[in-house]
Image (cartoon, rainbow, N blue to C red; front, side, top):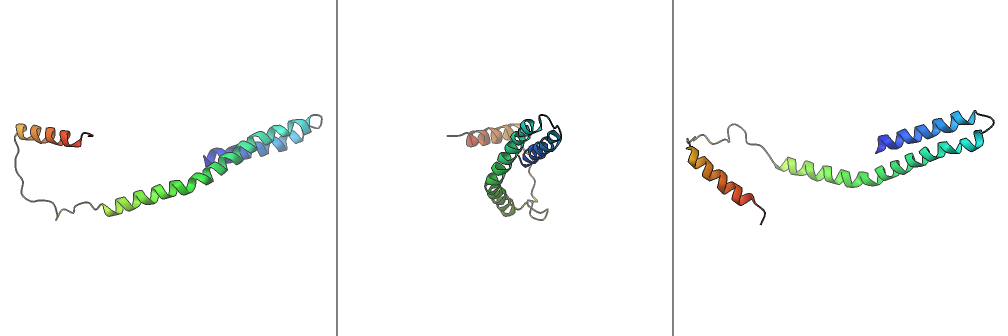
Length: 102
């Protein structure tokens, strides 16, 4: 939203200065530049108002990721057990049942 706001603001400024050089209709057409400038300022204000909420979301996400620590190779279980396909299917079904919303 900041990029679009800045683009509209610059576009409006360019319209205002380029149309101002047209002597005959410059004053009336110069107002055309104010429309994209106004849109750009509104977009920039909206982006600034949304920034604290987005920052809070990013901070909470980073905190959750910091709490989650992956297992190192030393922490992985060393005992391996071969499962049959029926046992794997049974485990997957029980996992599916337990993950359904209630």
